[in-house]
Length: 220
Image 1: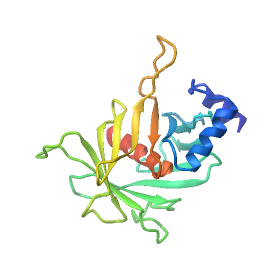
Image 2: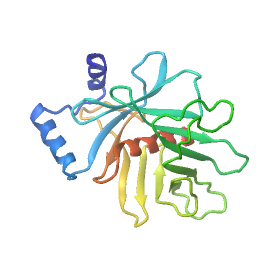
Image 3: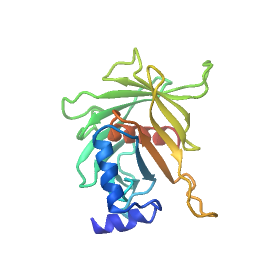
Image 4: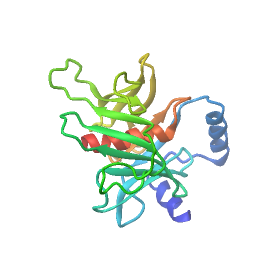
């Protein structure tokens, strides 16, 4: 873990003292303020592509390590210890609209049947929004709970290319947000490879990160 921590601090200039970290953890546990995560669009393993997600103390929270050329239609989100949290998997179909499923944990070998080897059901499906013949050009995707696509639970609006997105529930309340990370020192720019994921109380941070992975597949 020392290797991960030393590299994570390099992209996290807002490193906090231990006392502030303890206070932030207590606030998050009681459902207080929003949680701020720094997302680095880079794997910490040299032979992989992926993501590294760091909390406000500079500790590794989530990671994505994809070996180059491995399963381009399937991405697994892991916690700091390497345990699979969620799997994002693209659905192959002949329809114009692109669809993805999100599963808890891993889904096994899908190379032959295009289906999970286990009997797992997706916790949600996500549909990319096609702007053709639609008035709302600000919508990026719709999130449906389970395997249904009749009524969305969340919608994602904004621009992933500019790292400016919001996840809204049915009442249009913002539950998560992707924002550009501002550098504290003048003349230093993080660009779009390092950005912030803000997660509001009551919304799962792992699920929010899975939506980031989906947006990256849709719009990168």
